[in-house]
Length: 279
Image 1 (cartoon, rainbow, N blue to C red):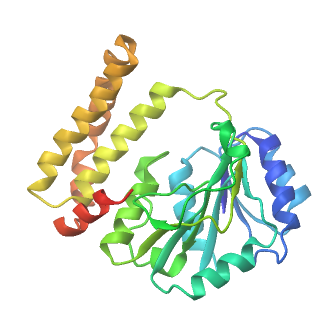
Image 2: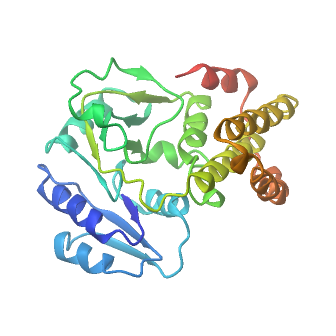
């Protein structure tokens, strides 16, 4: 599954790789989220069999992924970004065997060779397999049957933080989120048109909402205070231009507190602590 918005050139490259996979995926789901370019034409040209969901107005990548997870027919769903793809052409067979041997595995994710970190291009060792508290939807396989048992991705997040929030749900329910170097992902990450402060605000806001929805009381009160403090400390490190804009996400977060309280599905404190202890 892929969600994309106005990045037809990057998407074309990814579609070409997907079309060359052997064995091929059982299905391909792509959401064009408020696209105003030729995204749909690119998909039709390179992956004519793909299921295309078109949102006239952008709903955000998180809501799009939630819809595709629920719409998918296969039990294993390979999540990619429009600018990422697996480097191994037999990846479908590899991950299928891997999941068959691990019935408690909910999410499997992989090391990425990314333009954001050029040193990864020549890297050959990515460390051993280990359990984690998050993953990246730019290169992960999710078990759909597990996803449907849990709240899943929170659409109100719009962009960002759905991965650690979902990983927490999995860990609390007794499932594994595992990093493994059995595959590698090529991620053509670009910093173009990325607003760092907006990214920070969304991450901080969604992290706070997740805390309100998942962390049990009374521990949630302390965790909320810590989240606000740690994000403010990060803003201070970036300079005064960040500090004076930090309250913007506080008001966004406060406006949705009633919604978060209605959506509360707290896990046990033991599970929350265990999740926090994971790398």
